[in-house]
Amino acid sequence: MKIENKKEFPIQMMIDYLKKLKALREEFSAYYQDSPYAADHEIYEQYRGRIAELDELIRMLEGWL
Image (cartoon, rainbow, N blue to C red; front, side, top):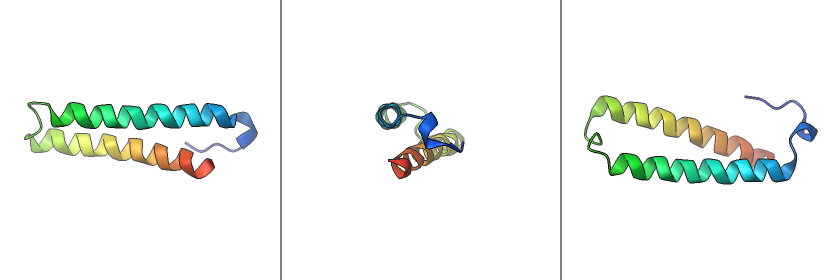
C-alpha cells in the first residue's frame, strides 16, 4: 500500500492507525504464545508471516510520521 498524497491522510488519523496496529500486533503475539498451536511449525510460519505484515505496516506509518 502506497499513499501518493500525504494530505489525503491527516496526521492524527495515521497516529491512531499506528496505535491500533501496535496494539493488534501485541495482542496477536500474546494470543499465539498462549495458543496450543504454538508448537506447530506450519502454524508458526503463518504466524510469522502475519506478524511481518503488521511490522511492515507499522514501519510504513512510522516513516510517514
